[in-house]
Amino acid sequence: MKTKNIFKGKPIWFIILFIAVCFTVSARLIYLPSTFTSLLTRAQMSFDKPAGSEETLIIKNSQMNYEYAVKFPGHNFEVRYALRPLDSLMKQFEAMKKDPGVISNISPNKFYPMSFQAILLNISGGRLGKGTIKMFPPEAVKKEFNADWGATCMVPLAKGFGARL
Image (cartoon, rainbow, N blue to C red):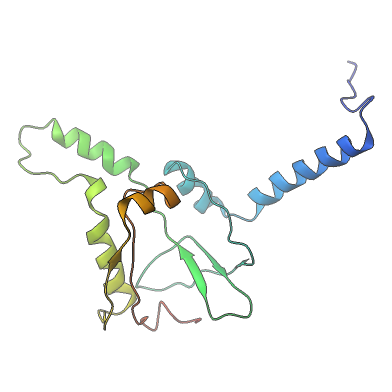
């Protein structure tokens, strides 16, 4: 069997560019753990590591499980990523809608405000302090994150969740 040289007749800059692109694409995929990438796939999401950040170890804690974390060298700041795809919940929801015995059923797409509040209470040890939930305008969160809802809130961290900080 004869192999074909795909670079024959190509200028050297093309070959270097091709290798650089291959390296960049493969390097981008290497640093993400498989558990995190499988959740990204299920959620139909993509991920770009923030500029200037470094991957850091996950802290086992009873307040909030998460799948990936990055830190920013020289700063006391860490971002922890928890993905909870709705694919299986949506299938259950659709099946229950067809069941005449089910009287009330809330769409998983409506869980986010309650989930956010539960997460805040968990990571703060039940102490929200002066934490005020500030919701993002729907059009802004759609434009920036392609999401339907977004919010932020500052809370004191419980010892287990904030152990490294």
